[in-house]
Length: 225
Image (cartoon, rainbow, N blue to C red):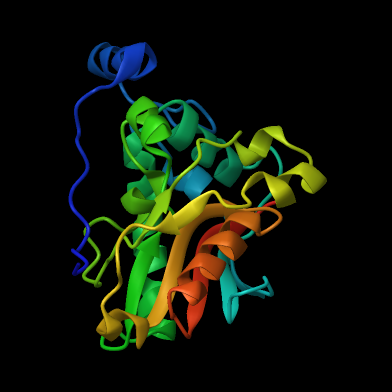
């Protein structure tokens, strides 16, 4: 079976929490998730406090992983990612697309690479209403494919200690369908918001390599601790 390019996710509200987020957005103006200033989800002053580092990381099964920003506990980036994932403020992703797109242009070629967003389990994506990794690259003029699926609705990594995170994702990913050879011959760039132990990226890369992928990289917003 041939592999299709990524489709747009369903934008409809799903679940009581998602519905509440939409109601609040309708009746209350946007506020910065870091300083509560009205106007934008991340104000210019707070966004300027997020430091770019382009740090290379070593994670098993990947040729290299790059973190675009410095991660600070209780910092603007941490608050922004939490707002994106758990307060369903979808437009948070927009603020990071420019830097992400610029980094891709500087380090990769559209001709010989494809972007692969880390998948969510269908139940979690339905609960959230979107996949944050897909939102980070939405609208970028890069080839995007979705060869991976999440087969187990695992406990969120953020709720586990380091040791449990490393085993939580064992066998949690699989190939959605046979990948065309033309994709396997390209550089695959996994996209995710944040990585702590690297377990998610490692497991996804392992599955892709088992399918025949040769070069796999990762680009994340930040490397957490």
